[in-house]
Amino acid sequence: MQIQLLSPREFEQFRGFIYRESGIRIADGKVSLLSNRIRRRLKACEVASFREYFRLLTSSKAGEELQYFLDAVTTNETFFFRTPAHFQWLTSSLVPEMSAAARSGQRDPSLRIWSAACASGAEAWSIAFCLDACRFQLRDWSISILGTDINETEICAARKGKYPARVIESLTDAQKRRYFAPVDNDMWQIRPRYRQMAEFALHNLMQPLNQPPFDCIFLCNVLIYFDAQSRQTVIDQLTRSLLPGGYLVTGPSEGVYGMLDSFQKVAPMVYRKPVASELPDPGDTCQGCKP
Image (cartoon, rainbow, N blue to C red; front, side):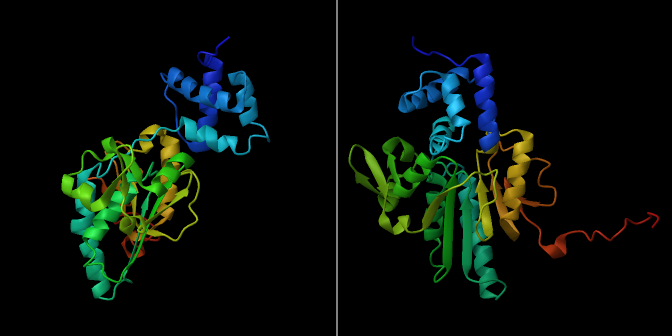
């Protein structure tokens, strides 16, 4: 008999497991969607039922199947220059600020940017395109762009830099010619010059990132899939990975209001982490308060 949908109990088991592994909360109405995605793994593993597959996932024999499962159930969309204001801020504010600080000896000529939950890489590559446009201001700089995602399939796609025409349809013809080369079957690939500018790695946002801190972190259109507790965990992890005075760029629906109290909002959806000298002295008492 063909398996149709997860039972209510199975749905709760699987979405609880997904939450524990990734921090992503599957909404109540996603039974059909989740069932369809898990069925693909049942077929691949030659498993007869959702119950048997859940036992496999939660056993010591899961091995690489856990990553395949997370790849199957995490949803990602990718667009180039998805929020134009972010990239305008990057080129018109961040780069000139960093460049001026380097010229005055206040910082090294280096720039590290992290595209967190980058899906198949469009955001990270859009950042690379922007920095290339500023290459005269950043001449001889050390530039590092890192894209990470929990989905291994998406990370592999990001490394290839190869996309169907529909993904780049929002770009102008001049941008397409500059950044991409047409390849087979209506596909376009990022030109080698730009593919050298970014690297990609597998990472779960609920876990620490074993990398030196960043000047800027992009976290866009991600936390909508997380509940408040998981969002706070992610924000805490990213804050630790951000240099003092660095910037966190968020999407319009991240739901992080109240989680960035110590940060300064410098532009729509752009927040600056304070440096030590800007933080209140914990030894200070308020005026008029008794010691």
